[in-house]
Length: 605
Ligand code: FAD
Ligand code: MEZ
Image (cartoon, rainbow, N blue to C red; front, side):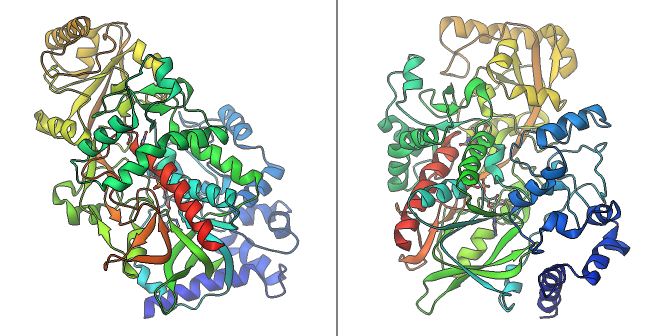
């Protein structure tokens, strides 16, 4: 109880003092934020430079969690991200430019917080210890798992209303938001992190679709929805929900076309393990898919002035006496604690790969294992859903991805292997069909000496996959003019490495992998330079989650739908069964996200 009172007090005090009672900034408020401890931060520095609070907050002193509005205010005086990248390039202390990253919708306020110490958001996944930011304290924010029960007894400071409330601004949440809006609903999209995108922002490989014109242009004519369905079920060890897989595989093409209607074109193809055809579609030149589609959908949202709030965490689902979900409580950086009532609520909060304690409850063997996930993937949505009686399915099915750069959180995309790279162990030898499913390849890596291995490729593959440039920039890639030189850098036997690659190239020529039966024998590794990245498996995807039907309605533990509640994306279970095929999550989040938006809008009418 003590905890609740203190927390409530802190959140509300902040909101109320910033918004002085007459909705303007009075002298006391200005003083509170420009002197003393708080004055040491960015806002204080702005006041010292002669700016007024209203210069950033507007004349009505309205504080907002709409990150875009706040960022536009920053850009009234400063340059946009591109311009800032040019400015910081001139004065770079670090090897890395903080304004030039792979996350395309990073906002000024993601790192530069006005009334608190600024943070280097990138350091949640990277270790750019020589990067500097003004008014910083510490190097990163530590995202703690919070006990959401503390919000049960807190009185909201206000109540808002909308048709459809979407919780979580990753790919599923954005697809649902755009789709609900296209279907005539008034929407609010809330995101707890200081930026949009979730795990979707990190997706590098692509999106599975069968039977496309892009496949046909590459001479792939045999693929079909039926084969795609069979591959997905088999890859998932046949424990997937067949109805959901049917919906996914039959509608992935429509999702691709829908993305095209928003101006995202996924025309580049690669393979992923367990698929009989090359059907992973990504952006031109093999550029990462996730940042591209988030930025596309965000452009739609900005164009239509949709209400998107960052730093706004949903902490409780609100129900009526019949158990219908009628709204959700928010805990927001500026907005404090308030309720949003809605006819339909969509849970799109993603998975829990970054919550090692929760992962460990289902897979004790994964305690302490690194993850490729963003720091917000901790499973809040599951807690919210469970509190109102939602059922879960396949919750213990957790995917480890075989190739996370050793001792980092950086995923070396399967599309690199899908474009022809091979895996080499610490003896300099191949040890697996690199394109088996992820659970199988991970198991083989873990059987190797010191439980790690190398992804090896050449210049031809580098040219094919634009995302490799990012790994090189991050210093993850060993580079050599010959295989002998590469072997030396990898600390493996040069003879073994040369022999393994010569044998692999012979298999390609003969179109048959006699050692491991790899089926996608596409390119020899022959065009120097040669490259290697040291890797080990890491927690990547949580296949299980909230149980839904093929209209994305959430099912309770009695097998009935929970009225008013929908879910889509990695928070749900059933689509991927016991093992997700690479490229199927993006297909899932866009397909079921769109459906959730459509159904939620229909319910709101
Ligand atoms: P997310 O994108 O994670 O979005 C959920 C959002 O909800 C997050 O922003 C989170 O902060 C927010 N949230 C959580 N709780 C709350 C709350 N209480 N209140 C408000 N907001 C909340 N899949 C593919 O198919 N192809 C790929 O190439 C691919 N590459 C990948 C690469 C990496 C490095 C990773 C980590 C995953 C990759 N995946 C890929 C998997 C895929 O990206 C994810 O499964 C998918 O993007 C999940 O989408 P989502 O919208 O369900 O969740
Ligand atoms: O679907 C994925 O998780 C995927 C394709 C990841 C990757 O290796 O790029």
